[in-house]
Image (cartoon, rainbow, N blue to C red):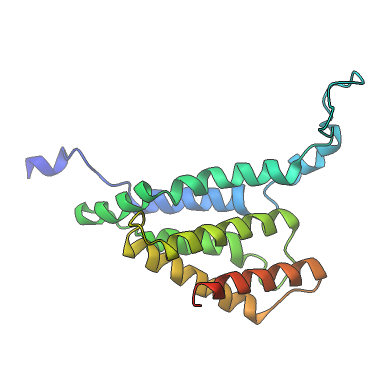
Length: 189
């Protein structure tokens, strides 16, 4: 009993892990996550001296910057070592599983606007996440475990089901969702 209180490996409580995922969902992945930053975009011009741009353009690359910011936590969360740690730590008390992680990410990134149009920032994010899920699900070199692959496959099927139900109203959203559905189905070919 004395060793239980001083265990060197103690999993983060489920409530705290869920709170962290909620923070990411609201501040990184939500459709309005970067609204203020986008409003400031017209003021992001670098100091102008009339030279020094050569083959580059002066305009801010907002979509690229937002996607980079959004992918940082995803790259960490979906890293094989992180997923392995989640699975291994279940043996000593962790209540948050790989499937829970994929479910929370999938809901945060895809579910918000099922019956609405998807803005272009979210389209980029959703495409990158689907590509990552497919990479994990199709992995054959042992980088990802069968547990990781199952969770990724389950999430792909969930997104395919949601997006098959409603394509959206504007042409951009329809095109995006059709692409996502085709990407998800590519796993089963």
